[in-house]
Length: 367
Image (spheres, rainbow, N blue to C red):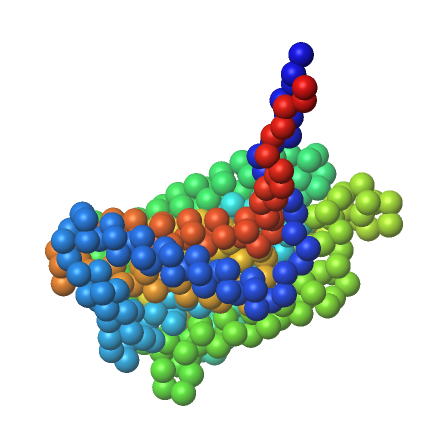
């Protein structure tokens, strides 16, 4: 009997670490291929010149000075939430509660602005806002962390449920504080007195969140890569048993790390309410607590890479409205283009980490 060689036509083999320039080259190639595919799809489905669409997206993000500042401000908010989630993800704690932690931080800031308007000087009100927002974010993250550390509950479900609780709390207090009564919204808080409005940096209302994002990015990079706490997070993420064997208190690391994540999310809520919107709504985070999950994973938990990932997503999102205005295409079309680009970027990570090794010789039959 003759038997055919059963060796597969190719194997998936893990690569050795690629030089940084080759990794960047693969990612650039993936983006170029994605843009080519988007151009083909645009031409086939709409008949519009794809170059004009790309120009329109760029104009939507950077067409004027104001648009540029708003784009950078939005990038900073998404980046901050992504940085907040990253330590937990690196520890294999699936914190899906960024949205709720941001909302509860914003609600705490709004409460200080409304309740302390005529009771304390503006500086003290802002101090109370900072403390309250950070504390609220910490508590909102601490609850699921405690149950995970104590009884090993499912953190994905608990953090997700905390989002809904935060949303309903904001909805409740929106009715309590609504102005005017019956409007179903709070409106601009302290519009006449500006009590609780965070200061403008160099006269720009956009710069504060950007500077905070830069500081937190540098801090998080150093914290995760060069601190004892960052090392413990990595060890716990690799193996809890190994962490326990070397004397790391896993429960303590979980709680400490989630408190950090919650504090940064609470800080984002403070910026959204006290510096950017001056009001609070159930949609003030704009779903970025969930988008940040994608940014963190896509960047492989590297704070520096997250800057580029956040920029790409916000750039496409900001360009969506311009596409709609110029060509009459709805917002979903930009989402399609964004999805294709993200698919290629995520997919190219396979070729950075692995390679296909083909069978060198054709199958032979034995006589």
